[in-house]
Image (cartoon, rainbow, N blue to C red; front, side, top):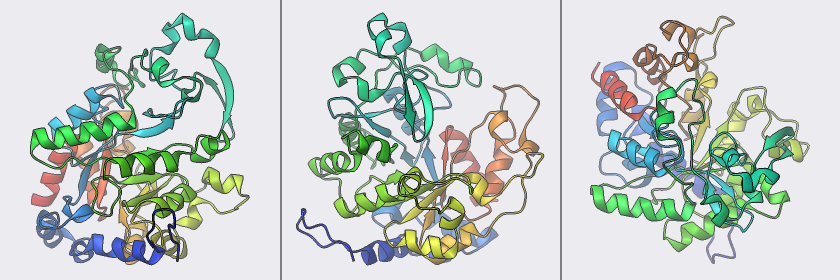
Length: 391
């Protein structure tokens, strides 16, 4: 049993496992049912509960906002995700500034998501660093103060796939996590409906070694805004299990372990000489361990349904059933409308910016029993969910 003496409360890992099971609630039956029975129960799964139980199933999560239509991790993207009806907004991927503020960027390297290269005063900041073992060249948030970052503007990260999004280059600044928490309250009041967010701690081992630990900063802000309890509308996620374990000792929020390809190793495991890979974490034993400190997993879609050599889908794995057995919810990532991001059988033509049969792909993934999905196109996801539940 873990405890958080600093916060004056006992917070054991057993509480995490029990909450994970409680999150499923009726969903324990819902998610085990196929076809029409599952759809009928899913329609009501989000009604009357608190915390994660209040969310519709399957949950539509706006990935970095509405990043299919606006530059990611901007208030333009976040607001549009809400306008489109996303149940939850991933706002945002959290990285620190040199002076210790948390900002929302996909990666600490910001050359591809901001106009920093167009600022001659920052040309000397361009450098090469080893980020989680990979040499990376560019500009890094930890080398800028917040005031300096606020002089930059966001740009589209994948213009080859989303040329229309470049129309909005230069319009929005980089948001801070504190600004996001205030925005969440403002939008909840404005829209008359609780707004949920799903922030991620990015490269926590890397930043801890720099003296810029993420978890304590996240917890401090959540406590400041009264959003650090089990029913708070803030789900925390990380690719590093030890980051989630640290958060488990600091806050009571729902927690999710992100999982990359089966043969990959979380970087905290690499640093600790832990030989396990994601394949070990998704065994029944590994999932039971995760359920001791988290409520969910966020696997790549390929862990739910692998792809064959030709890029088409193979048979689903047992991951959904195995995770549900230990009370974990599954929010896989990422559904995108454009051809290159879809399984081969759902592509239409070869254009990099053309849409494929994304509704067919959504249907196939929903049929596995996943509890939700990250998508760059929340409106598409909501229509696909309606099709699935009414089909």
